[in-house]
Image 1 (cartoon, rainbow, N blue to C red):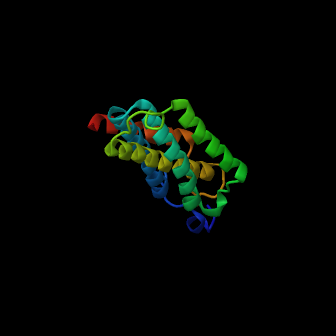
Image 2 (tube, rainbow, N blue to C red):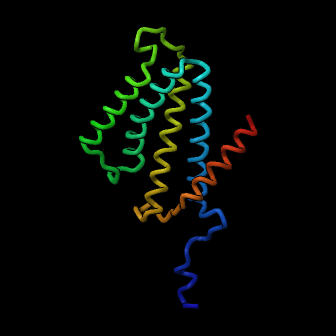
Image 3 (cartoon, rainbow, N blue to C red):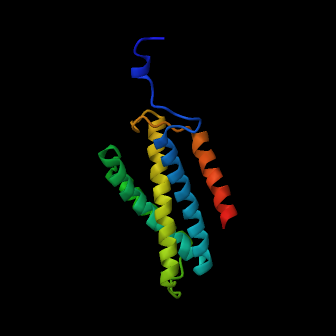
Length: 166
């Protein structure tokens, strides 16, 4: 044992990881579960096409903005990538053809709010996946490392516990 063992030792962990890792994984899992639940509730309140178009469109834009705020300048977005995002959102709208945009009745405000909440939860899930993924690949996540199996296991446990509580 070297004389600097206690000075150079990594932060204390338990079998689930560091406290920061556990917190980020739990937050990611809860956001994903809340997104799935909100999306399913919005399916009950509005047409499927309207819910998908609204959720996927808002999720795309919110993920770009949230990644820019949360990850700062380390996450670059070129004009080509931004154009791809606009084309993707346009494709979502043209593919799903929501009734609200193509001559039908607009959905209720509560249904729109539920679908928007689902999109925001999914955005948090996506950005946290990126943050934890960058840390795993050595991209500077503040020493946090999460394996894919850890991310999946946290998510599955959250889904099980959440499903039992509903």
